[in-house]
Amino acid sequence: MRKNTCKRLLSLLLALLMIMALAACGGGNDTPATQAPQSGDNGGGNTGDNNTPADNNTPADNGGEEVEQVLNLRLNDLNLLDVNDARNANEFLVLTAVQEGLFRTFTDENGNDVTEYAGCTSYDVSDDGLTYTFHLREGCEWSDGVPVTAQNYVDSWLRLVDPNEAFSYAFLATGIAGAEAYYNGEGSVDDVQVKYIDDLTFSCTLADPDPAFIKKAGFLAFYPIRKDLIDAAVAAGQDWTNDYTLHVWNGPFIISDRVRENSMTLTKNEHYWDKDNISLTQVNLRVVDEAATVAQLVESQQMDVVTLTDMEYVDKWEPLVENGTLGHITQSAPSVTYLVVDQHPAANGGPSGLMLNEKCRLAMSLAFDREEFNDMFYSGYNTVAYSLIPFNIVVGDTEYRSKVPEQLKNYEDMMNDPAQLRALFEEGMVECGVSGNAEDAELLVFTSSSTVAVANQLEWFKQQLESKIGCKVKIETYPDTSTWVTARNEYKYDFYSMGWNGDFNDPITFLELFVTDNGYAKFMGGFSDPEYDALIAEAKTCQDDAKRLELYGQAETILMEKGGVIPLYFTTNQMYYQSYVSGLSTPMFGAEYEFSRVKILPH
Image (cartoon, rainbow, N blue to C red; front, side, top):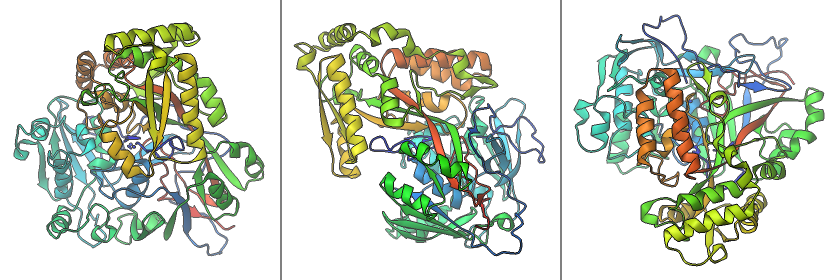
């Protein structure tokens, strides 16, 4: 997460509770070097009052006026700087700016994703669909002047599946021949079929054809690394994961300064292969917690781009949009927010002892009035979710949701009948061997956020369950994220709120999270179902789009009907930018903003 916990766990989602969860290219056999790979264009891009052009290669005419090329953005501070281990949207935002993989995604004038060759200039696919050969761009360098070579990619892809690292996104690479056995401790790294050919060429062979593989290959976790620097830092006992001074960069910018929990400064990378088309000299990122403070900074032009978490400003800023002060992008994001329910066997059903039972979970899922939640907390701007997969996600050329209706809508009568919900919940209690009736059950929801907005949402969850089912709900607030994470890992919850941004345009980027023992299982409640696992395994290698869509639909139905996760809403981003910001991209997948082609106009 593209994770939430991926793309990647979710600053753009979670004004909600406590964590951020958490990118896409296409191409066929023998793709010519002159043809850039294309992201899935499904008509689900940006719409709204205004949109900045993605192509900023030709500088605007400034009338001879010199304008300081500095961009100011909001920052949720990063947990780490490791591309193989990045999981959160804030990490994707920064690391995509300072590092570069095979491809880079922008948005066109209509807001649709357009993926271009970046670290490579072409790739070939064997006739059997198993072997991909990547041809790297000559002249790419790290910020210390060392050339970017095929070995940097090989090192990264092998490190991604190293069982000693246990990276959450390793599952994206286990389709590579030999990778799954190596990751499971049953094989050798020498058997993983990622091979250096020469400094500008490497290949990868899959165990089975994977229709989504080229989309995965452009994802942040597959970016190249400098293994020599990692090894040196580890040997010296240095904090390579978080100390930016130990890193080098191969993207448009470098991290030149960082104050933890406060700010970060990016400056132009003079070693970047496309530096002549980078106008910005500096990007200032500032940690600001409160929505009101963010609004003040935007209104005073001290912050240049923002995604709203407080929807009251949509109406408040309408005059600024109408008079041209602010640009406004409304974007249907590949993003879903949901309640995680503790189904880990080691948790024994959570503190309530009930969460291993699918009837209890389904009753909870059906109890929430999603329309009320969306209206109350998001002014109706998001889309209520009665399923896991957001709208505008495609299988081949087919929009998934147009063929697979949202499963929870089949239970509409039960949603409006507390007596049925209570009866279903109490049936589950009996099956769990928990005595008493619904009033005797107590569910625990927890958070590490102390904001008023989060407190109000938790109270809403409590009210809904207590009034519809009759069970009690206890709210527990931890003082910080680290203590909350410890409690989560010790299964001290029944449910909590989380979100996930899709990492690439295929339903598998959501559905694979709930496969037994997936790298993200510990964040997703630990749902486990053999039939579900088998359907996803078949779908991952299925070359028939229609059949794959059918398999996805069957799997999602199992997940919804068993209450494996409780969806709440699909995100509709409300993005605002100063009118002097030209060339901003807002890709559907990957980083929230792609700002490498931004130019600051006179103002």
